[in-house]
Image (tube, rainbow, N blue to C red; front, side, top):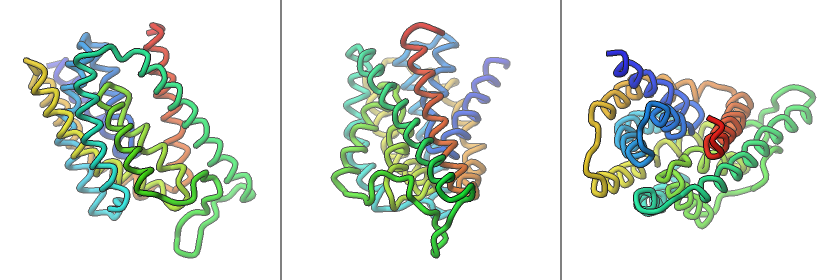
Length: 268
């Protein structure tokens, strides 16, 4: 019972992180499963299969709360599915250490940029958050002014591929959306969570086709923990102030990327 309860707890923590910050489910749960002795491909397969159910609940709640923008979620979904299938095949058949190292370094830079932008914007407004007439926060910390379908299609493909090999869908997709001028933090989190369901289905189907055995007890425990906490995480994401959510996202990216780098270089 203790290992089973531990797996449920892993599912709770991973989904709470993902539902509030738009990232962290894969990296958090993968780190825990690898520490418990799972092989990388088996861990990724179990995580993505569990995410079919947790992302369905999380994405649905975000959609109901108005956190999802179809002009963002649709292109992310289309290429996220394609990239995810290619990434799953790569995870099973090819070594991915150099690519994971590069991705971790890129994520670290993104996290630093996001945190610095939010801090700079806060100081620029004399220590207080400034809001636009429509209720949105001032966005002077952004570096890209508008969304383009081409940018989102590219982002979805890259994020889907990296996610399947173990880098994380959320850190890539959410961090990039956070740097776009007309995307609010809750919209970035909600749209990424919504698109994640479809990408996860594709990745899981690929892993199931390529791997002979999956531990359905592990998958069930992760599903149980994630489904229970998913609605509460989505509600919290909507209620958190933009600046707090932005700093939390940036800080989480930094921590996750450092964790990945330390693992790659054998520190733990």
